[in-house]
Image (cartoon, rainbow, N blue to C red; front, side, top):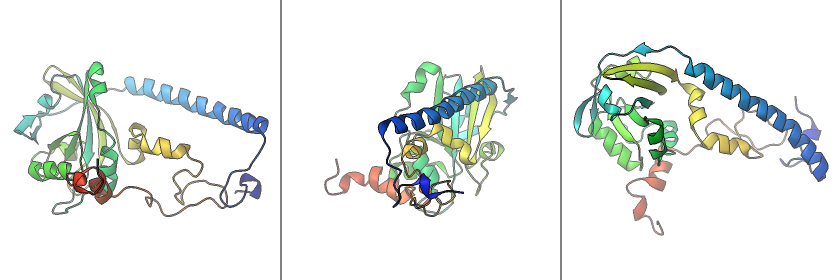
Length: 241
């Protein structure tokens, strides 16, 4: 339940003196720091998870068939995002398209002996064409002719997934998996939006009375939006850089 005192009216926060603002910020900061410590504890538990060995899958890359172990490109650790795919559709999942559009500079993973790639159920030629259409910068692979995607939680006509793999020589192991809102932890979009006074403006969120709110996903970029902003035809727009 919310009360009128939560809001200053018209969807605006209360206006208070600086001392009151600092006191309430300090109260919130206590919870934020506790959440940070809990995330550290979760990461510590994640590092202690066991792992399961995977078969010797063969995927399709830009240059043809490639063994899963070679997708690592010599690195020991691999993050795999399974991008949803709908056969025959010009525009694929807006959530997946928008999510992966964030990752334009992944070289920071090199010192950590890691790589981050996209795998999709779409045929490789279609997948690469779509990658160009939306201006995606990640490395893409296809699991259309392999059970890899289904085995890792993203079957044909299914959802998306995030997995982490570890290589020991030619042996590949699955160490971690998530899906749904679990992928938010590797995004910067939602953490930034959640800092805003109005947050995501989605009706499921806990917000004071009078805050702007609408249907879930209403503020998300569509795949067409991503293509228009960053894709292969973006440079043809008047005034485009």
